[in-house]
Amino acid sequence: MRMRHEILFAIATFFIFAFAANAQEDLPAEQVEVIKNFEVQLEETEKIPLNPVLPPLDTTTKKQTYLVPSRNFPVEYPAPKIRPIAMKAEDLAKVYNAYVKLGAGLPRTFYGEGAYHAFVNEKYDLGLDANFHAANFSGSSVENQKFSRGGVHGRGTYYFDQGFGVSANLGFDANKIHYFGYNFDGSDLKNIPDNRVEQLYNTFDIGAKIFNKEATAADLDYQAGLNFYNRNDNFAASESGVDINAGGTKWIGKTNSFDIRLKADFTWYEDTLKQNLNNYYVQPAFTYRADRFKAKIGLNVAADENDIYVFPDIEASLNITGSELVVFAGAGGDLQKNTFRTLSDYNPYINSRYPSLIIKNTKYYNIYGGIRGNLKVLDYSVQLGYKNADNLALFVVDDAVVDSVQRKFAVLYDDVNIVNVRGTIKANIIEGLEIIGTASYNFHDPDNEVKAWHLPALEINSTAIYTIPDEQLRLKASFYVESGPPFRLPNGEHDNLNTLVDLSIGAEYFVSENIGFFLDINNIFDNERQRWRYYPTYGINVLVGATARF
Image (cartoon, rainbow, N blue to C red; front, top):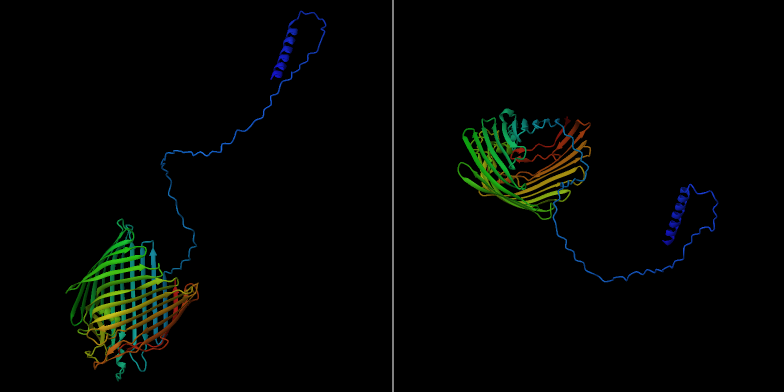
């Protein structure tokens, strides 16, 4: 620092002298003698040694205590959107609006069916279908063993913008059969004209319904409908029926529901005597649904012209191991109408004249229980049930028929206790192969009659369908077994008809997207067993034809 001051002092002195010399203009121009050159030297200074030393480390541990007041700061952010992982969409099966199927076969069989469906502007849902099937198995030993049946049905629905829909249906069916039973049991009757043993059932149906197509603000589903039918035959028998029904479902918490159904069912039957059968129903029920448990508790309050009946409507199910094993049980009951229409549908060879045919209710109570489940490739169900049926319809050969050619059946009612064992499976073992099978056995115990006449005990029905991946080829096989039902002999004794074992196969192949051909071979075992006394089934028959779809 001192050395810096001396340097600055010398520089300042130099500038002062230079300025003074320049300022003295009157000085004489004489020589200046320099005695000694100016030399600047810095004196030696004493250096102070410095040796820094770090302070000692503080190794003690001190506990620090902090007081931080808690504050809640509201944070607003949009709820996150959980997006599903993208999955490959399955190819939807192509839908065709119309198809026609025509065929013919042996012995002398003709078959046809067709349908058309259109859904226009998401408002109009229209459909039309028609069918016809006729066969003549008459030969040298059996005459008038022939039938024909056909029908046409139309339906339509209009969906309103207000959230409800209105639908209507209209249909007509004709079913012609012949009482050819005179050919059997040692009869010598021959060359009977077909119009003498012909029976034709004509049925006309019309109905309408209103319903909600979208969920209402009150979570209420509703519907109301009206249906009318008329059936008549060749023997001046005629029956009309009107079914008025309404109902609703109130959803509670999106899973539980309360249901109410109201129904009035009227039937008027007339041949030589007029008969009426009118039933009324009120059916409330509450259904509770949980993850593994479901229960329905309700009543079926039914009334006819004579009495009021209260039937239970209860069912509960519990998932033991998820969908693999479900245990279920229930109890119910109803009034089941036996009308001219329902009885002739089940047995077309009945006598439609009073007193052979009396329309009546079957009152029954039933309880049941079983297990069901899904084992990946197999759906199954096993059920055991008991039914107590009052006035169950049985069928016996009508000895009161005046015309000996026409062998008809009379309807006989009896109280019958029924124990039923039933099992069902549905399997998809490999891709394209579907197998469905059902087996049922009924133990009938009538109160007055010796047997439950013409009601079979055992039924086994199974079907296997295989479709190749491109759906160009479809193969099917059906196997049906039915035990021989008991029948009553004229002398009061009884016997059983033969057992039916029926195997049928078929194939359908499309040569193009729209045109295909089919082949059906029915009753390969040529079993001519009698389902109804004196009326054997048709033997082996073949049907071949073509299918068009658009």
